[in-house]
Length: 429
Ligand code: TTP
Ligand code: MG
Ligand code: MG
Image (cartoon, rainbow, N blue to C red):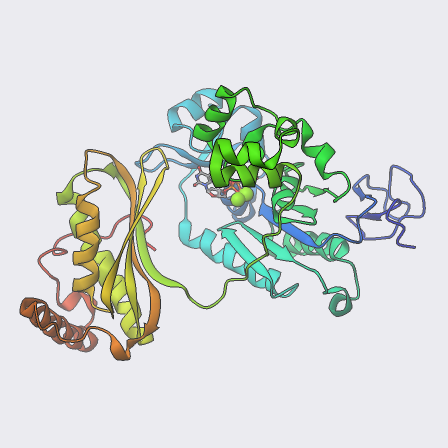
């Protein structure tokens, strides 16, 4: 029983008694076998074609059709189902190109609210397996299942296979699982046999496994850095394995150390559960990319008010204001500024954000703007009267008066000059 070399069936979970190709109990070929199968406990889970899968679940007519989620005024593909991918459709592709490649595709507009809800539902189910769940995005997370064998009376591998089945039965979409001994390889593994995948990478095979893989598989090696490496003749991870640490550090600094370690499968980063709230923020993605202050400033103002409302409701304040921008080509820019005291006032958040934003307005087109505060603390010491800037104190008093009116008559009762007349934007969250 539980011989890792015989493994178990991912469909009926029966332990296998031999090395046969099909499950002796249910006959499927979906068997999991690996020498380290019952020792590995770090998993990465990612939903398959997430938005498209949710839409197919909710409209069975779409099931066997190529489906593209995207469109709206943005005109790019958010995701495509695996049938559409066969025709070459990919995320972030302009819509017209996607439809050239797959004219018969059904295009569905994204319904963010729905996807966020499903993502949350899945996350709660993950938390039933272990408290150590580290969400990475709307559809993926790391899980550390070390030490949960007693609780589940089962191995992490089998717990994960059961989980994949449960998501299919109860949520109605499919996931892919990567199981390994560290985050780096768990993440690579989950991408390995998508959709409905379950890949295992053990400690003993890591170095050999990585040898012929491209350096872009290493965390933090983006296009630009890969080009630098390529300029130095390095393309495969194996080449990094043959270099020593000091050479790599001399050439690439701290990144060199990372290359040295990850190329050898050495990754000691822990799975960090979503701890206490670390920041409060609000962001919005635009229908069309924006570059002008006259467009961005009112949005920044209304987002600042939203953040402020949340802070006030939670009786907390933040000392560092963080501005987030995403450019047309999906690059993120994060800028922050620390204040003398923690704040919960929309006006302070907005003015600080504005100061940060002004430096970024160089004609670049943005697809998203967000503002928030971190360094959270209790509201007790927030926003002391400003002895130098009496205007700021006045504005704070005005804001508190507006708050009282809004509590009484609703948010729309008082609009400031900045937000007046701006409508609700797409996918504000
Ligand atoms: P991913 O997990 O990257 O992709 P996916 O779930 O669609 O497909 P895969 O099976 O390869 O994991 O992203 C999750 C969701 O995020 C995706 O369904 C849509 C959204 N998304 C975008 O809106 N734009 C993008 O460019 C990408 C990559 C994803
Ligand atoms: Mg996914
Ligand atoms: Mg993902």
